[in-house]
Length: 440
Image (cartoon, rainbow, N blue to C red; front, side, top):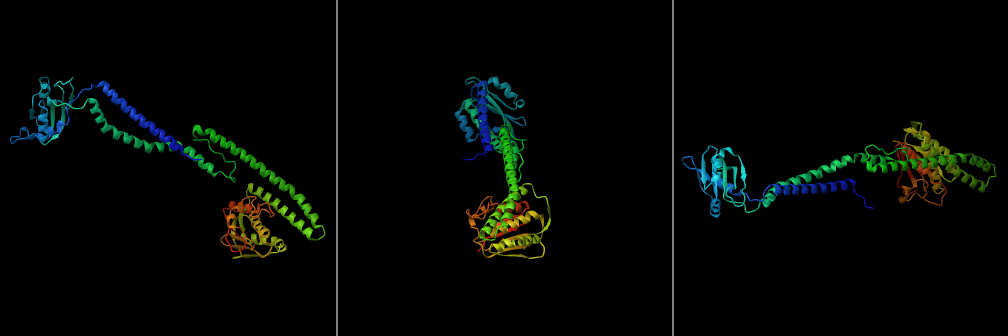
């Protein structure tokens, strides 16, 4: 399945629509101008700079025309060309014949800033007044007699290109930068909901996704997810309660069975049955430990790791010796203080020692070591754990050797206890045996 970005799926259509709207509006403006303005020709504005460059003053300060090659070419091509030049000091110079109907305007040129007169057909009244800069300063030029070769429509398109293309580019760039930010802000509530969803795990049950700031279109999805979480929590609670009740109910018959077996005559069969009952009792106790973990650790206080590990090693020494091991305890100092639940930490270390007894090969030594800062190590000299299974062995109900006894809960219980203390349990690579290390 290929994932896609919701934000960009919104942004690209918006940008496309915006571009189409701009193009449509521009086309509409163009055709509107075509309907309200006659499709006539205007004078050729390219004449203006050539006229301005040809204006200079003689020795007396009067204006005179010194045609540049370009102006001379235009004069030859357009015999009807005429223009009136008015300087800032009021001096004036004329070229060609000004149409009679425009004489009144030409004599009052100082009163007109700009104009664009378009007459019908080839009427000589078509003219223009414009202000330009010349060698003698700013001047006003009124001229006519040379028309544009293009129609008004072509000229309008050419002018719109100069204005429209930069405007379109600027608008699209601004939209490309602004729209993603606006869409991101609009989806900010969904991003916060995603962050909360990512934080939900087995140890934070009961948490639900907030419905605030969620887009209306996604509200049914978030509501459905909350309903699913509710069902999962309910099912998980029922399962845990069943396991705890079953384990609790098994303790009494297991104790009675163990008492009856101990009353049997000594022998290999009795010992085998006692070992099996012991494993059954250990599994029931581990299930109860998981239930206790779900209810939280209520006795978090300062504990001594040296005393805890020494007590575990002493309690399990008979089991280790009976299974064919030598068990030892060592500490780098007399006391290693830590903050935690003494009972939970004791169960974690005990599970590591039982794991060593169960899977250590029935020979060699088991070492329980405490060292600062807050490190507990349990080693054996058995076959060890393959490198590709060192993470999986901490999963519930996983067993490195499926045919061996045990429910596969012990190491998972160790991992949960250590994690709730803010620590980490790991398997240290070793040439011989398994080496578990708890770092609180």
